[in-house]
Amino acid sequence: MTPMISARSVRKHYGNTRVLEDITLDVAAGEVCCLIGPSGAGKSTFLRCVNHLERINGGRLLVDGKPVGYSERGGRLHEMRGRELSRQRSSIGMVFQHFNLYSHMTAEQNVSFAPVTVHKRSRSAARERSRELLGRVGLADKADKYPRQLSGGEQQRVAIARALAIDPSVILFDEPTSALDPELVGEVLEVIRGVADQGLTMLIVTHEIEFAREVADRVVFMDGGVIVEQGPPAEVLENPREERTRTFLRRVL
Amino acid sequence: MTASEAPTNGVESRKRQEDSADLPVVQRRYPWRWACAGGVVLALAWMAWILATTETMEWNVVGEYLFSSEVLAGVKGTIVMTVLSMALGMVLGTLIAVMRLSPNPVLTSVASLYQWFFRGTPTLVQLIFWFNLSSIFPGFEVGVGALGFDVDTNRVMTPFLAALLGLGLNFAAYYSEIVRAGILSVDEGQSDAATAYGLSRFRTLRHIVLPQAMRVIIPPTGNELIGMLKFTSLASVVSYSELLRSASDVYNRTYQVIPLLVVAAIWYLFMTTLLSTGQYFLEKRFARGAQRTTTSTLAERILTDVRGRWAKRR
Ligand SMILES: Nc1ncnc2c1ncn2[C@@H]1O[C@H](COP(=O)(O)OP(=O)(O)OP(=O)(O)O)[C@@H](O)[C@H]1O
Ligand SMILES: [Mg+2]
Image (cartoon, rainbow over all chains, first blue to last red; front, side, top):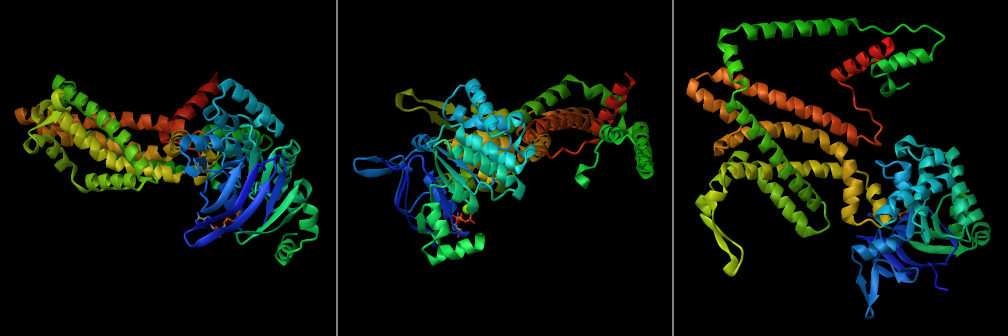
């Protein structure tokens, strides 16, 4: 079976700063993969490359067997134009550290916006689905609130509903709880756990080691733009082989 | 309670008072506010009295011309020119702002060049330039080959068109900076999210960024609109008939300069008042989702207070 996400020697630099050195990583369909590592390791950058918010400078990056941001014709990669790119992105959900909910739209509109404008669903069907999803993340009564009227935890749960609304094949989470007050972290992790149980492919950047241990099929430790170590949580988190991993875990645990 | 949560009007503070029902609350009084207000009213009344009784103001002449057909035609000219040149300027200005922020270096340079030129030369010069275009290009050809026909520049470049181009193109250059500031004020995460969910650059701009930028764009736009209303008086140099020109046409005939300038001033004041009211409602419309309340004006506070009292009485 082709992996859902497949990175081969992916490189990325901003000017002279090399952010991703040589990332090779496969995420199978249905797998939950947690990405951990110190600040500046390049975790967010890698995630942004996966849906082409950033362009990679070398290597190959495939989602669902297709190169991200490029289409293959006649043995060459052609840079995608707007519509193709939009189609490719439209099967990838993304949850941001700072939620990034559209602040001029209510929770319900936030969730139904992409289904209506990008996926061409009917407004009424999308609205109904939106309310259903908001119910699933425990926010049925907050559907008509604007983001600024919601707590951080509630905003992030709306953001997760927004990701689910496009029926994604992959969801990317970039530190979904690190902008939250400690007492709100639990409710968001609870919702992510529920999503993980449904068999969606997920790539989660997180600093919550306990959470990673519990939900991840695999943990990937990144540092300085390279993958230092990866494997099942029991291995990487309990018996890390690399010294760098041990140092990191000692600091965060 | 922080300062920003302090009750902003009478109704709200009364509500608070009812909430804490167990102890009687004595509202704070503001004797100095009343004293100042009294002083201001007295000063205004005194000025009004002086103005009203001064012979040279010739109020009867003001009354005579305020609604004369000549002045009304000028008012119409001013309104038409303000609306059209603003519309032209806003559309073109938004386009230029978007061009300046685009990743395409050609578009960015063209936009910068436009701003540089139109902001760097006096509006008056631009107006006169458009009006005298025929002296540079006496005629030009429209179309290609056999289908083309010649156009006499003088016939096309009417005072109206010269004024529209002069004011509109100039306004676009200033307005583009307002729009650009608005776009830049929207958090990048907003367009990240829209892009990540498959929206094109154009749709991200149209559905996500611009609606949020409007909150920042509207107040200075109101400012510019009011400025433009008065700026149209410049169009009198290309003999476009707007309010100031109509007034001066009259006083050149009758030598009643001051009363006619008063007539013009009254009309300008009236129109700017209307515009400010429109701005107020627009701002309310685009404040959706932005919780920061607009500070209430004196008129608003009086209105809510009167409404509150009336509701109580019923
Ligand atoms: N647009 C950019 N221009 C230049 N450098 C950048 C840019 N974005 C990120 N970087 C650099 O790339 C490196 C990796 O950044 P990234 O945000 O991917 O780290 P991260 O692993 O997500 O860290 P954190 O845990 O703090 O979120 C950092 O050193 C950062 O300074
Ligand atoms: Mg990050």
